[in-house]
Length: 69
Ligand code: FES
Image 1 (cartoon, rainbow, N blue to C red):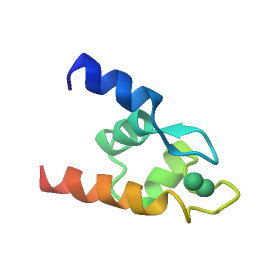
Image 2 (cartoon, rainbow, N blue to C red; image 1 turned 120 degrees about the vertical axis):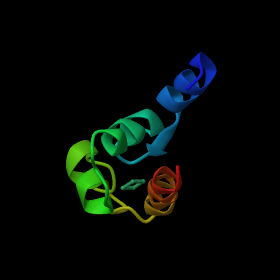
Image 3 (tube, rainbow, N blue to C red; image 1 turned 30 degrees about the vertical axis):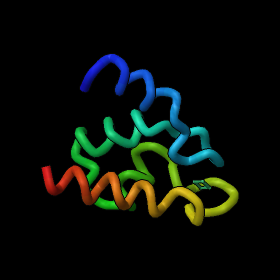
Image 4 (cartoon, rainbow, N blue to C red; image 1 turned 45 degrees about the vertical axis):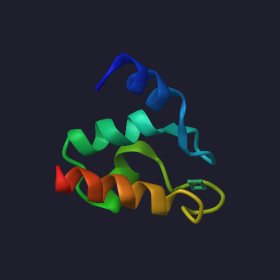
């Protein structure tokens, strides 16, 4: 990951309800979270007031991408 990508991921709130960043999601996936439930447990994403309605799709996409790499 380039420095630019790192900064962008650190500033991007993938789950705005809980302020969980794209970087935190990536770190959770790299740390072995291989399902939405595990990512939820590791980061708290998808536990905000919308219960994942706004962020689940993006997180699913990131998970799918990580499995294709
Ligand atoms: S945006 Fe993630 S729980 Fe609402």
